[in-house]
Image (cartoon, rainbow over all chains, first blue to last red):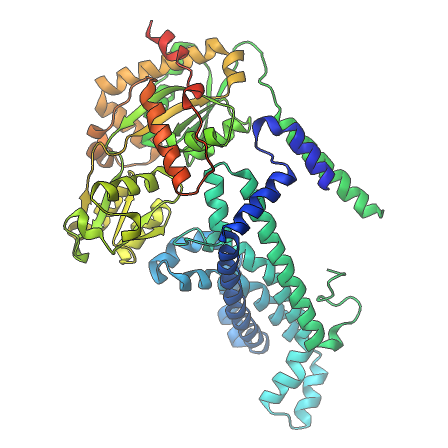
Length: 244
Length: 324
């Protein structure tokens, strides 16, 4: 792949629209030396993490609620399905109007994107639990809390984990919208500036950084799941890094 | 190597090869070449808008297909990438393209204004004069001429950029943020100045600073295109001269045409038209503006020095021949 990149950039060098890998590496090194890269990565990772935690938590709660309660499903299901395909970038003007231009608006934007995959997976996972498990637990006198935490959620866990894992990528995808307004740092903010200044080397460097932190986050998530829920580590499970 | 890896490698190779071919695409040399114009659909492109809407391109004997872009930067990208022949673009993207070593020529300047950028402030936030901006939150569009104007405006009022808090916003978002009170002022171009004032009424005031920064809009093409199609390019410039005369002699009709094409209400255009001139020219003033902005871009670490000699990017032959 690197060889193909070198060949392509060599032939396209006249226009300086296709920098070589070394030029991109030099841009990365420059960004690292000035401290700009660390500052931007920290800012973007913080926005992605907060959005992931908030959106993921709400997604699990609402997914469980709509999966278990027909009335809530009828009330919110269609609304969520309607909102789900909206690109986060289309919400930027509304969020500025309602929440302003500071960090909370960015967290909400990322949470919005993260929420839906987690919600729908939790909803489906909760629905797909074998009713016999629930009847058995109920006949043994399990409380609602026990039913939720010891029967339904563990049974729906593979789907929930799959939704959460999908949302890691979505969180970084949402940064494009989140860092469009009111941001003065962040990987995507820097990429926008690089695009304006024809710094294609820095633009590609930004893409590589964004891809790398997304990959690292995904790897850490898989490791966490393997440690926290080792019984899920069976063949074909959604959190298996190799199968995904 | 597995089958899927072979397929992935071949697909990737084809993608890169296609990109390389696209980057190297030479203009076809068929007769009556239709010029693809990458146009930023804004009042700054008034002359090209009038030229195609009023039939001046046809009158000059050139076929032009218009491709609309939301910014001059994207229009310039289309030309540099080979997707269009000619772009309408402000001087800031040209300045960045020059520093980046891109291959292009500016063949005409078709818009000039020393008062196109202004400051919209919340007068109910205790801002009655420019010096009151000290310590306030100011919205600007980072990396564009709005940011350059912001620096110039602050300096001309004995303020430093560090005396205020700069907030990066797109022009549309600036109006919303000011209305909501998240920022105290913003510095940008039309129609966002008019929109901010219209949204806030008496709670907003406008500070003008004519002459501290000149906005230009220019016609840019690649040298190989100019070499392949000199007749078509000359006719294109001739059509712009006809449009320039039309804008001068029929301002009401020109405003209506531009307003209709850009969806900007005519009263908005009427409010600013006096600040705009639409020549078809090319001179050393553009070199001066580009060099000043290049120095700013270097000072603010947007790009690495050195600034190029921008004279090499100007080709005045077409403007000169259109005068005769």
